[in-house]
Image (cartoon, rainbow, N blue to C red; front, side, top):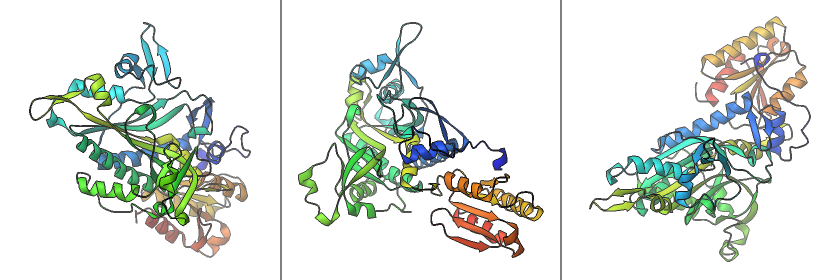
Length: 445
């Protein structure tokens, strides 16, 4: 993509309403524009990152055997009255009346709707286990939306729902989700710590939140520092293997890690003092097992092996897709701008032409640009007539992890400059070698 043909409305000054890093940089980098309080338009750069995050989530959900679907954003209030949550949910629910005076609502979560789909179509234990998920827009009418996409009213969310015959089967689904989430977050360059949490209006006794440590986190968290040394890595996981999934869960949840809502000072004090940590955390996902809460209330039953009608055991599993984008920035930035991990970067690298209009520099940039595209990569070529300093400032602000700088002086010596956004380190390489290194980094060599 040529920058001269792209829509990238970067700002030099920070808008007054932006209080935290991710909000400041998303506005300045031209990723979002506020439409109304807590509701944003996603501009091309922000939309690209949103799709990168979504693709990783889809990939890992399918790897775990979960089935994608899509449900509407508007639901009937009647389903929520069946479950008993319509009046209990509170003012965060946006309630709507249609032209026929039917009570509707804008979806904050979809346990009722998915249960209705299940009970209409599944009647036998032979059709279990079953896990379906969607990535869809949700709305919760926050009393004071703030911090950009971190606490907005409209947000993009992955929500999945498992249906199992027994509690044991449902807890395996819970473990399977925990494992898949660990893989998902690491692929985005994040360390998200699973922490024992409160279930809130979803309900249920078993729940973990995944939190990314950041100074601007909304939750106070307490944890054993050993947990930050754990990595999921490239280990192979058979998601049907109950013992293997259980072992991963125990590895990542056996050390103390809790939010302020479930913190137990007496238990925390049993952790060696040198390993006790208190910090702030950003919630980026949560998994729940809530048993038969919804299936009993809404009549979602199946016949078991003996022909008895039994309520299914359920759980729900969410990832804040749009919130993740803000969390990544909070965890990965410096005073010049964003630093995208390679897994979610909107463009794989930037190409900066130091002297647009110079025949040799233009030709070299065109060749590098074409070579990267031929490899299946997506570079952003700054072919504008801006000054070099302004070009570098834009590249630093939008945070592409690698930059190839091309100028007449370097080309006279047969080299271009390859720079890491994260470390700031640069090396001079022949243009072909710079392309080859970028290809190697992204595994397309």
